[in-house]
Amino acid sequence: MNTEDVQDRTPPADARRIRLPTGVAAATAGSTSPRTRWLALGALAVAMLTIGLDTTVLVVALPTISVDLHANTSALQWFTTAYTLALAALMLPAGALGDRYGRKKFLLAALVLFGIASAACAFATSSGELIAARAVLGVAAAVMMPLSMSVLPSMFPVRAEQQRAMTVWVTSTAIGLPLGPIVGGWLLQHFWWGSVFLINVPLVVVGLIAVATLVPESSSGNVFRIDLPGVLLSAGGMLGLTYGFIRLGRGWGDGPGWATVAAGVALLVAFIAWQRRTAHPLIDLGLFKAGGFSWGTGYSIFINFAMFGLFFTAPQYFQSVLGADTLGSGLRLLPLIGGLLVGTRVVDKLLPRFGVRPMLILGFAILTAALVIGALTTVGSGYGYAAIWITLLGAGMGFVMPTAMGMAMGELTAERAGTGSALIQALRQAGGTIGVAVLGTVLSTRYAAELGVYNHSPISDSVTAGVLVAHKTHDAAMLTQVHSAFVGGMAAMFWVCTGICVLGIVLAATFARNRAPGSVAGVDAGESVHVG
Image 1 (cartoon, rainbow, N blue to C red):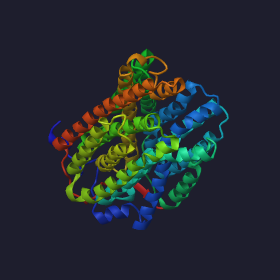
Image 2 (cartoon, rainbow, N blue to C red):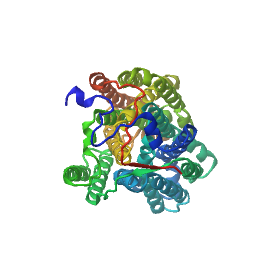
Image 3 (tube, rainbow, N blue to C red):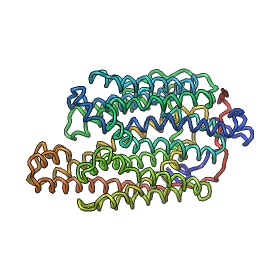
Image 4 (cartoon, rainbow, N blue to C red):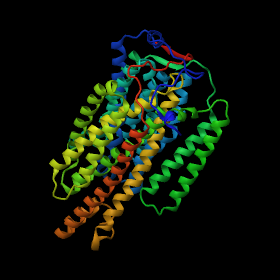
């Protein structure tokens, strides 16, 4: 691959894409006023906020749920796994269905389903009911994530506006992640555990009304058949890959886990082979020839490592080492939101002026600095020190996430925006799942190694278990060793994330090429947009 293949630019007009003047493009997007379009974006932001909240709010509720529903360890794991598997398996088909039959229709249906499933989770009376409801939540999220992003090219055909809209979309998704533990911790202190799911319902209602009244309907103007073999192969492959790495996250010696990963990879290879030969492929493999799509998606996966590294370790560090409760742990993540808002605000101003390469390099550099500072954390560092690297992590994420997603989305035709958006999100989801498995293993291996004479079950199972044993036995030496071992494991994990972010700097400096700001995003001649 040469430099020309990976430059971040809007490709020239070809048989796949037709360039229209700004006025024509705007007309194609419908007669909606700028105010209406931005209000519609606000509705999409509310919808995505619910997904971000739901992703992390469950973490703080698990201990209470385990008692009330008499859930064993396996059931607790499936509360999360059921959601993740449904999300991974159905994202690509959801994007294709939205392109074919109307993105707004499917987005509205997914919002309704998400609200119903949230209520079902809240009032579940057994582990089986909660697992089933969480799976339905995953189905709804699999539709909401790609389709809420896929309508942006039609709503904002001018490239500068589309990038700004993408920044808002990314911010709303990212803010929901640290808000989950805060909202969940507060609700658990005042209400029953079901309230952490019930909070989704009013947000869904607001999003539903706003999307119905403000977001224009859009679909592919070209009638095409849904690739059913592709649907089955992609769903099976993503299901196997995701579940396999979830199992491997508990231990790399898991034979069934490796077998499941191998089966998932085999199905995905078969899926790609089928996409090359079928007349109506589920995804456009030609997208990977566009540098902006390939590299933008790759940078998005890189950022997931830093993000999941934070969410995987920070709550444990706050609660087990600093002694915070669930609500206090969530509140200590507030600097992340502050950094994220500052980062996205600054990049929104600087990106049109300087282009993507400086923003990516600067963003990855901030992330690298944050992770290095985090890796140097000691048991006695305290929260003030942690707030510094958490804030910097948020700022770095604010620079890289919207820039990378904007690169990838800039290569999509409006006609296949649903499948393209679904492909971006599916790859990010797979990368995130693999990242959690890898980073979790790095942390747990280093933690166990530094326990010394205490390296045995249940102390070696987790820092939470180790702290609990130390408190029960009133063993101060054990508590000190457990704290030190966990901080050492956290440092090892952060050094891995640092290496990935340094790689991001090198790749961005080498391959990213600036595009002219303010260019018009592509609108395909076959795109069908309906206002109302």
